[in-house]
Image 1 (cartoon, rainbow, N blue to C red):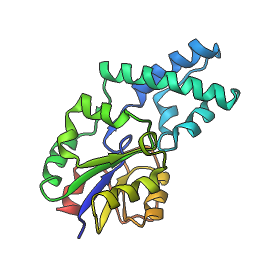
Image 2 (image 1 turned 180 degrees about the horizontal axis):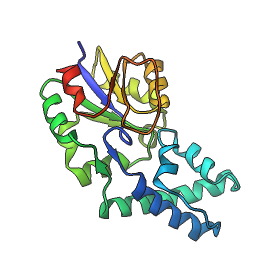
Image 3 (image 1 turned 180 degrees about the vertical axis):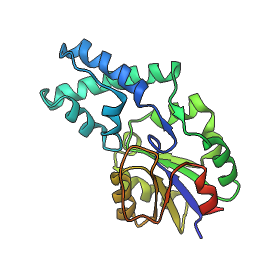
Length: 207
């Protein structure tokens, strides 16, 4: 029925929120002196949104320019931390990708900065399973438009999107792509094509 599977990254393929929180908290407090605390749970409530929206929610007292400057440093610190302490892959992910990639082309579309998906590939070695990927940091576009880019570049006729937040669902709807809700992730979604409680359940639905 489907000819491609597009995945979200954070909350769908891995959970890196605790590691990112460590890096961001240190950078923000070093640069601003605000003394704020950031936890992985704080980021889970925000991930899935564009990065400027996330940093504005964390630092509303700063100007847009200050937020952008802090975010740039946070990004580099995040990469440094994740190279030492990578995010946690969800149980069953590797075996599921192995199985699905035999029948489908696999893709990633995430609302992340340039280099983040590449870092995911670097620290996990999972790039061999994915045919293409896109993000705002690379294209300058948000998730719905990036889904359409993936569809157009890879001549997909009937892809499906797997994600964990309402933002993922809305972007899928806007792009005209059926949505599978990864309920083990960060968000709450209703009205989906299918729901999975673990990543390996995709094999039952799609194989």
